[in-house]
Length: 204
Image (cartoon, rainbow, N blue to C red; front, side, top):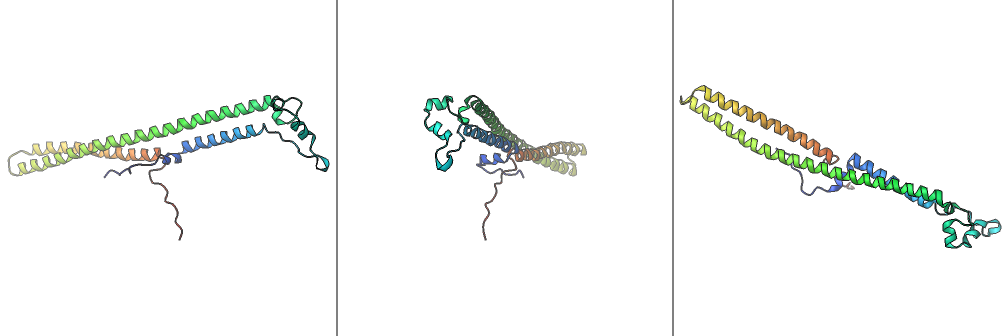
Protein backbone atom coordinates (compact mmCIF):
# COMPACT_ATOMS: atom_id res chain seq x y z
CA UNK A 1 0.00 0.00 0.00
CA UNK A 2 1.27 3.51 -0.81
CA UNK A 3 2.31 5.48 2.25
CA UNK A 4 -0.18 8.18 3.20
CA UNK A 5 1.08 11.76 3.34
CA UNK A 6 -0.65 13.82 6.07
CA UNK A 7 -2.67 16.87 5.02
CA UNK A 8 -1.36 20.30 6.03
CA UNK A 9 2.32 19.53 6.53
CA UNK A 10 3.96 22.67 7.99
CA UNK A 11 6.55 24.46 5.89
CA UNK A 12 8.74 24.67 9.01
CA UNK A 13 9.77 21.08 8.24
CA UNK A 14 12.00 22.52 5.52
CA UNK A 15 14.01 24.43 8.12
CA UNK A 16 15.66 21.10 9.02
CA UNK A 17 17.23 20.81 5.56
CA UNK A 18 21.03 21.19 5.72
CA UNK A 19 21.09 23.73 2.87
CA UNK A 20 18.40 25.88 4.50
CA UNK A 21 20.10 25.71 7.90
CA UNK A 22 23.45 26.65 6.39
CA UNK A 23 21.94 29.60 4.51
CA UNK A 24 20.16 30.73 7.70
CA UNK A 25 23.41 30.54 9.70
CA UNK A 26 25.18 32.62 7.05
CA UNK A 27 22.40 35.20 7.18
CA UNK A 28 22.55 35.39 10.98
CA UNK A 29 26.33 35.81 10.89
CA UNK A 30 26.11 38.53 8.24
CA UNK A 31 23.42 40.31 10.27
CA UNK A 32 25.63 40.17 13.35
CA UNK A 33 28.50 41.65 11.35
CA UNK A 34 26.28 44.59 10.36
CA UNK A 35 25.55 45.17 14.02
CA UNK A 36 29.25 45.11 14.85
CA UNK A 37 30.04 47.55 12.03
CA UNK A 38 27.24 49.85 13.18
CA UNK A 39 28.49 49.71 16.76
CA UNK A 40 31.90 50.93 15.56
CA UNK A 41 30.34 54.34 14.94
CA UNK A 42 29.86 54.85 18.65
CA UNK A 43 32.86 56.49 20.34
CA UNK A 44 34.87 54.36 22.73
CA UNK A 45 36.47 56.80 25.08
CA UNK A 46 37.21 57.19 28.74
CA UNK A 47 34.47 59.24 30.38
CA UNK A 48 36.31 60.31 33.51
CA UNK A 49 39.70 61.77 34.39
CA UNK A 50 41.52 62.20 37.68
CA UNK A 51 39.41 62.87 40.76
CA UNK A 52 36.24 61.82 38.94
CA UNK A 53 36.13 64.71 36.52
CA UNK A 54 35.10 64.52 32.89
CA UNK A 55 37.80 63.32 30.53
CA UNK A 56 39.14 65.53 27.76
CA UNK A 57 37.52 63.33 25.09
CA UNK A 58 34.17 63.56 26.84
CA UNK A 59 34.46 67.32 27.08
CA UNK A 60 35.21 67.59 23.38
CA UNK A 61 32.22 65.50 22.43
CA UNK A 62 29.89 67.32 24.79
CA UNK A 63 30.95 70.67 23.36
CA UNK A 64 30.64 69.58 19.72
CA UNK A 65 27.59 70.17 17.56
CA UNK A 66 25.89 67.25 15.81
CA UNK A 67 27.14 68.48 12.45
CA UNK A 68 30.73 68.60 13.62
CA UNK A 69 30.30 65.21 15.26
CA UNK A 70 29.03 63.60 12.08
CA UNK A 71 31.83 64.96 9.89
CA UNK A 72 34.60 64.52 12.44
CA UNK A 73 35.74 68.09 13.03
CA UNK A 74 38.00 68.71 16.01
CA UNK A 75 36.86 65.56 17.81
CA UNK A 76 38.53 62.20 18.24
CA UNK A 77 36.98 58.73 18.53
CA UNK A 78 35.80 55.94 16.21
CA UNK A 79 32.68 57.77 15.11
CA UNK A 80 34.79 60.44 13.53
CA UNK A 81 36.87 58.08 11.43
CA UNK A 82 33.92 58.36 9.11
CA UNK A 83 35.45 57.20 5.83
CA UNK A 84 36.94 53.90 6.99
CA UNK A 85 34.14 52.91 9.35
CA UNK A 86 31.42 53.84 6.87
CA UNK A 87 33.12 51.75 4.19
CA UNK A 88 33.28 48.78 6.56
CA UNK A 89 29.62 49.28 7.43
CA UNK A 90 28.60 49.39 3.76
CA UNK A 91 30.64 46.26 3.08
CA UNK A 92 28.93 44.43 5.97
CA UNK A 93 25.53 45.50 4.61
CA UNK A 94 26.45 44.24 1.15
CA UNK A 95 27.47 40.87 2.58
CA UNK A 96 24.18 40.74 4.49
CA UNK A 97 22.18 41.52 1.34
CA UNK A 98 24.01 38.74 -0.50
CA UNK A 99 23.35 36.32 2.39
CA UNK A 100 19.68 37.31 2.44
CA UNK A 101 19.36 36.70 -1.30
CA UNK A 102 21.08 33.33 -0.95
CA UNK A 103 18.72 32.37 1.89
CA UNK A 104 15.67 33.35 -0.16
CA UNK A 105 16.89 31.39 -3.17
CA UNK A 106 17.66 28.36 -0.99
CA UNK A 107 14.21 28.48 0.61
CA UNK A 108 12.47 28.81 -2.77
CA UNK A 109 14.49 25.88 -4.11
CA UNK A 110 13.40 23.80 -1.11
CA UNK A 111 9.73 24.58 -1.77
CA UNK A 112 10.17 23.80 -5.46
CA UNK A 113 11.80 20.44 -4.73
CA UNK A 114 8.99 19.48 -2.35
CA UNK A 115 6.37 20.47 -4.92
CA UNK A 116 8.13 18.38 -7.59
CA UNK A 117 8.47 15.39 -5.25
CA UNK A 118 4.78 15.51 -4.26
CA UNK A 119 3.71 15.84 -7.90
CA UNK A 120 5.89 12.88 -8.93
CA UNK A 121 4.51 10.78 -6.09
CA UNK A 122 0.90 11.64 -7.00
CA UNK A 123 1.50 10.85 -10.67
CA UNK A 124 3.07 7.49 -9.81
CA UNK A 125 0.11 6.64 -7.59
CA UNK A 126 -2.26 7.30 -10.48
CA UNK A 127 -0.16 5.08 -12.76
CA UNK A 128 0.02 2.34 -10.08
CA UNK A 129 -3.75 2.35 -9.64
CA UNK A 130 -4.31 1.89 -13.37
CA UNK A 131 -1.69 -0.85 -13.58
CA UNK A 132 -3.23 -2.65 -10.62
CA UNK A 133 -6.55 -2.68 -12.45
CA UNK A 134 -4.82 -4.06 -15.53
CA UNK A 135 -3.15 -6.83 -13.49
CA UNK A 136 -6.50 -7.78 -11.97
CA UNK A 137 -8.05 -7.93 -15.43
CA UNK A 138 -5.23 -10.10 -16.81
CA UNK A 139 -5.45 -12.41 -13.78
CA UNK A 140 -9.11 -12.90 -14.53
CA UNK A 141 -8.26 -13.54 -18.19
CA UNK A 142 -5.75 -16.23 -17.18
CA UNK A 143 -8.36 -17.90 -14.98
CA UNK A 144 -10.93 -17.88 -17.78
CA UNK A 145 -8.43 -19.23 -20.34
CA UNK A 146 -7.45 -22.05 -17.99
CA UNK A 147 -11.13 -22.95 -17.48
CA UNK A 148 -11.69 -22.90 -21.24
CA UNK A 149 -8.65 -25.13 -21.75
CA UNK A 150 -9.83 -27.55 -19.04
CA UNK A 151 -13.26 -27.84 -20.64
CA UNK A 152 -11.74 -28.30 -24.09
CA UNK A 153 -13.04 -24.99 -25.45
CA UNK A 154 -9.53 -23.58 -26.12
CA UNK A 155 -6.00 -24.81 -26.70
CA UNK A 156 -3.14 -24.19 -24.32
CA UNK A 157 -1.76 -21.41 -26.52
CA UNK A 158 -4.61 -19.20 -25.27
CA UNK A 159 -3.51 -19.87 -21.68
CA UNK A 160 0.13 -19.05 -22.50
CA UNK A 161 -0.84 -15.83 -24.25
CA UNK A 162 -2.95 -14.70 -21.28
CA UNK A 163 -0.12 -15.55 -18.89
CA UNK A 164 2.40 -13.55 -20.95
CA UNK A 165 0.14 -10.50 -20.85
CA UNK A 166 -0.27 -10.96 -17.10
CA UNK A 167 3.49 -11.24 -16.51
CA UNK A 168 4.14 -8.04 -18.51
CA UNK A 169 1.48 -6.17 -16.53
CA UNK A 170 2.84 -7.50 -13.23
CA UNK A 171 6.36 -6.44 -14.21
CA UNK A 172 5.18 -2.91 -15.05
CA UNK A 173 3.32 -2.71 -11.73
CA UNK A 174 6.41 -3.86 -9.83
CA UNK A 175 8.55 -1.22 -11.55
CA UNK A 176 6.05 1.51 -10.69
CA UNK A 177 5.94 0.35 -7.07
CA UNK A 178 9.74 0.54 -7.01
CA UNK A 179 9.58 4.06 -8.44
CA UNK A 180 7.10 4.95 -5.71
CA UNK A 181 9.58 3.88 -3.03
CA UNK A 182 12.25 6.02 -4.68
CA UNK A 183 9.79 8.94 -4.77
CA UNK A 184 9.10 8.52 -1.05
CA UNK A 185 12.84 8.62 -0.33
CA UNK A 186 13.11 11.75 -2.47
CA UNK A 187 10.22 13.35 -0.59
CA UNK A 188 11.88 12.51 2.73
CA UNK A 189 15.04 14.21 1.51
CA UNK A 190 13.29 17.35 0.25
CA UNK A 191 11.43 17.68 3.58
CA UNK A 192 14.68 17.48 5.50
CA UNK A 193 13.92 14.13 7.09
CA UNK A 194 10.33 13.10 6.52
CA UNK A 195 7.07 14.59 7.69
CA UNK A 196 7.04 13.60 11.35
CA UNK A 197 7.59 16.47 13.76
CA UNK A 198 9.27 15.93 17.10
CA UNK A 199 6.90 15.13 19.92
CA UNK A 200 7.27 17.56 22.84
CA UNK A 201 8.93 15.92 25.84
CA UNK A 202 6.55 15.23 28.72
CA UNK A 203 7.60 15.14 32.31
CA UNK A 204 6.90 12.30 34.68
